[in-house]
Length: 317
Image (cartoon, rainbow, N blue to C red; front, top):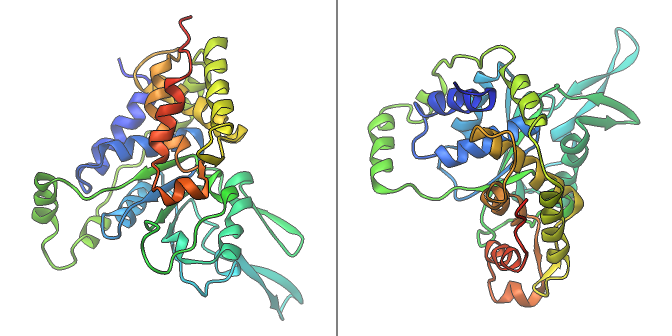
């Protein structure tokens, strides 16, 4: 019999699999983020179906979807909204921006400047937005996905470390294999292309299923040995000579939480070291900041994580 976490992923995989092909691993990452109430950074070239993915997911969640297309001249108010004066009632009223939605896709986030990127910090961490000294609460299951172009693209700004640390996961999209791309061509080589898929009706998730999945994850057992294992990974990353910034405490918490969800997705009520190892690259790589020397050598952050974890004793309890 499937658990709540397994049923949740099964429903999402089955429905999104009808419009997106070869993205099972990425959809698994999205399921983890939904249960953890975290946000996702998608990295990869344009044209791989990120907008279609976000629109489809919003329909399954019964939520409102908004897309923010980032540009270099964008201002923070373009995301958060502004206050306008209402002559009739003689008061200022909020004209909400696109962040006041259930599912938000921030497209090409690193094409806009640091000032506008920073407007997302409070929304991602606290689920609130403060405008003119007044706070507004975002939807309960506010979920943000941001796409990021590779850094060798022209006209991109690096994301601040504090911004990167607020993304629970970084999922990397690559070009599909030939068979998968043939499947995409068969479905979308008609007028309208991928927009045809966005008009498809999706069955909403089973009532209360997401809440049941969260309850199940909370009941997953974690031994003290595994807590120490994750803490040792974080400590080792902070003294790694190729890194100027290692894993933060927020990052260690994210790693532990996602390991819980990974265990639950496999039908277990306890976490094992392999759960940590499976999800860790998506948690750690975007949080690591390379030293200038390592950047010049084009060092891979995932490989640095692998080197770090190879030096740490695996708990046996």
